[in-house]
Image (cartoon, rainbow over all chains, first blue to last red; front, side, top):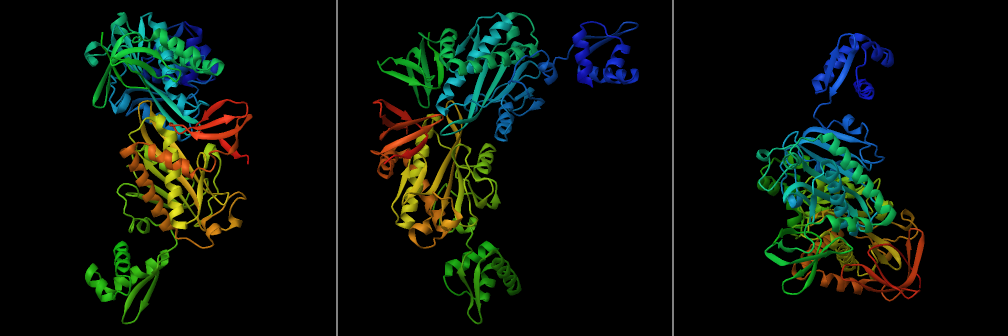
Length: 318
Length: 318
């Protein structure tokens, strides 16, 4: 019923009388009043004006599934959205949902994570209510060898979405970070479950710093608010990310990864640059030359060799 | 306490008096009698002879963890063994244990499976008490791109173990079946959980037909008993498989996959043979030429192309 009341208030974009609501939803005036109180409690700012009725001033600053779904317009991504105020890690939640058969497009989203994780078991700082911490389950009909490319696809899709909502010049730091002004704005993590023949499911996870202040973030990080000077609706950003991810994901059925790799090259911050890759106990110095067809980075090392890496820690050398 | 009684009976390899047992384990004669009854109930055949004492005639024909662990001699594989009379699928159990952090070497084993699965979602017939239905959790420090090779390693290791216990001429049908006398003796299934950078865990699952009769198996299948004309101790076969798997797994730390691929080529039934690979809506006709370094099969097609496949359905053409 609350869903329906919110829907009505959003659709009318102005005042709606208690009488109208009562007639359309077939509930009593007292019932409406009770629901309004509960919606306010969740964080909806609802004005009540004598003789005019109710008006939705603003939705709560929360990533509620009904808010994300309203006007989303995707077909697959976000069909099912699981919301947590706080969870350990949306990656872990999504992985276990995926293993239990959750359908493609299922989204796990949280206001905060107590054990948010980045690549290779590192942690991801998740200030409450200031970012997007989200994992999406995909079930691609692909070979596990396409996994690296799927990770690049996620980077392209999220980068495009963030550029669109912010007009900032955001680029991709290989393999899976998005930078704005040289600082880390978002991290993308992909996790695979596969047989030798085919992928069973992939979880695309992301952490995006939206409205966090410098104080709340690690030193090398930034947020959309810091870079653009204004706050952003996290719900709107989530919607744009889901739309973009769905667009690029559908694109591989149309033309394989060609388009993705092409756009990745354009958005990449390191191609043609001198880099250092840190591996276990050594550093590789060289130049990032190109992206291979399998999604690996081709590096011309200072010792003259041409090598390829599917992933690694890159430091831009200058 | 039952573990300890069995241990004593096994170690002495003959009669052990109630007085001896009572003294060593500090329990009453009545207590011993009660435990003996319970052990018989589980399936241990224990003889009781006046004036001589108890003797273990034979353990039950069940894959009990204590039986598998006795004399196993591995360091990692089988440290933890989870036993089921019946489960849906040891693959599913192992995968969910792995996702929850089960340690490397954990084994899930069952007397029967109600939804045993093979490659690509196919089913695996699991006659109760007549075969080995087992999944092992590994946590290799490898790139996900080594996954196909790890699957070959599992095939080599299980093939070697079955050859050793049976003296049969067992070979590998690419990618993951073991054949004896041209019929399917065992199937191997591997499942991966990985990030782009590294594997998180791999489940190696296998179904081996041990003492099943022709009647209990699908038409294209055979069992160790059918081929060798005699029954085999399933516990002994499990132990040999775990030892072999541990040996070959440790081998990749010593010399990478070189040794595995070499042995695979020797055991492979299709190299040099004409084959048909069935893919989605087409068939590829050609000759299986060699194994690539990444574990893929190199095929020279009848149209003159040289192609590579990491997996697929192979029919030997003659």
